[in-house]
Image (cartoon, rainbow, N blue to C red; front, side, top):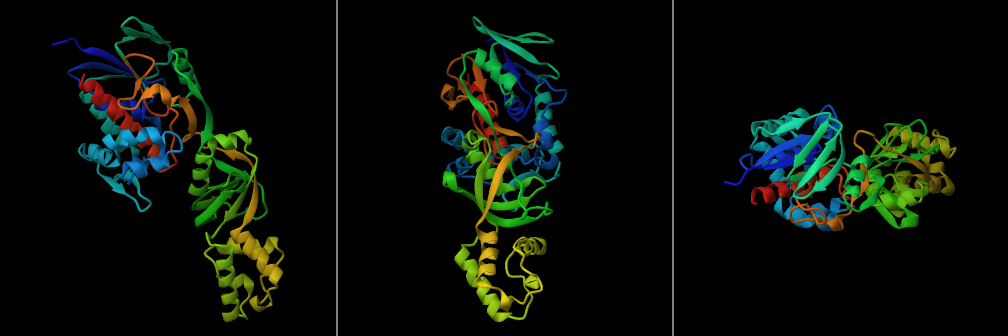
Length: 403
């Protein structure tokens, strides 16, 4: 029997742990090096501490549509391991999962600890080593092995698996080994907007809204939320992800047009006229015509100086036009972005042309594998970033186990 090879996994997050959890302990000595004091930190805080493990989308072609970067490369990856496989993997390790109505998948326990325990126990049962607070400073290729230099001493590896996440320091280390790095820009951010329509309304939400960026001829729809800073919610996050690079070039200064009720203005006009004909004596302030909160409706009337006591029959054509424009075609100026530090996602990372997506090996370095957020791959919210990690990690472990 050939002697066991030494694998060093750099990064104790989702991709690193899932790779280790699926490696053959008969063939390999595995050590995970994690620079923080705790492993699996993103898993822990994801989904508000419930861990949004993956998404109920079981068709690989459909699944790739949620990845602004990496969609082409991930198609073959997802044909080998997709969300159904992720569910089987955790459920067969006594972590029952549930699909919520928006198709996000969580552990039934509603605690990310269940997911963390499954991964940690699997790695522990294989007697693999996990070293916390070990910060890699440099990797040097030496003949058949890699020398991994850290502030806590050096390690020697026959095989390196690089799953560090997207920190600039880790990208610098892999760039020094000869890999090309695509510049990082934020993805998944909220829009900073100062506008009277949004003032004093944080927490107000819209079940389905449409957002357009006219200058980029792009639009997205979905739930929308008014925040202290401007607008957030899936509709905003999706458009920020798809246009991450362009919006960075615009320095986050651009105009958007919002349709708060997702209805063409002509349809909304019909509804308003019909309501007016049927309820002529009702005051405009008390009229529940569209699916928006009373506070938002009052705010539209207030900023357009329409007296809420006015009978709806007495609304002028101009006043009707103002109401409809605010509901269906509201132009707002975005003057910046806000990102959530904890669940921060970036576009950018290791250039995908330099990775073999059959097994996630580097095309530049022998016996070197790359997966997770360190790659120039990112997704919209909903469990998709984790799914890419699980699938890529699975390919690495199966490829190495078969060597």
